[in-house]
Each structure stands twice: as structure tokens, then as C-alpha cells.
Image (cartoon, rainbow, N blue to C red; front, top):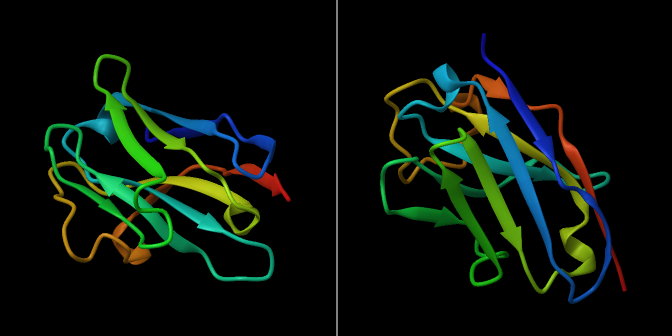
Length: 128
């Protein structure tokens, strides 16, 4: 059964840090491009970062490059998003998403229609 469960959201002051986790079922995690997306209040959902579990390349939105880090724990089928130097504009519901097994993240990593599997989301609020 495909399952993605996010955790780690919360409230933090500007400049602070949070780490989001996404626990995946093994079948979802296996060799699949996985990503983080976010939806700020009143705005459309947007891509934040993406990566494959067994590849070294990482993809980031310009707005988070240098502040956020996406990583995997392959032993526990978990995807992480380390968020540093948080800004109020980072406030959003953050979603974990996965593509089908064998998919490779690439230039189209932000295309949400390529991700059939989504978590329920976790709220991140950054106060100024």
C-alpha cells in the first residue's frame, strides 16, 4: 500500500530551523523520485526540492537554494527536508510526494502531475 506520512512541522521564529520527515512505505520509496512541495496561504502549491534515494543530484527551488537540504534515510524509507534560516514567506503547508518506482528526478521535477502519491501535509509557520 502506498503511504506517505509527513511530520515535523510547527511554528518557529524567522531565522530558525525545522526538519520535516516523510515516512514512506517501501514500495513507494524504492528507486522513486521524491519531492517536497508547499502551498502558502492563498497561493498555489509549488515545488521546493526533489531527489532520488540512490542518486547524488538534488533539485531545489531558487527561493530555498542554500537554506534547505533534502536527504534520505534509505534504511528507514524516510525523506527529510532540513530547513534553515527560515523566513515568514516559507510559511505553508508542506507536502511530501513520490513518483512511481524507477522514476528519475530531472528538469521536470516541479511538475506535480508526475507525482501520483502525496502525503497529507504538515503546517510550517514562520513568524517575523
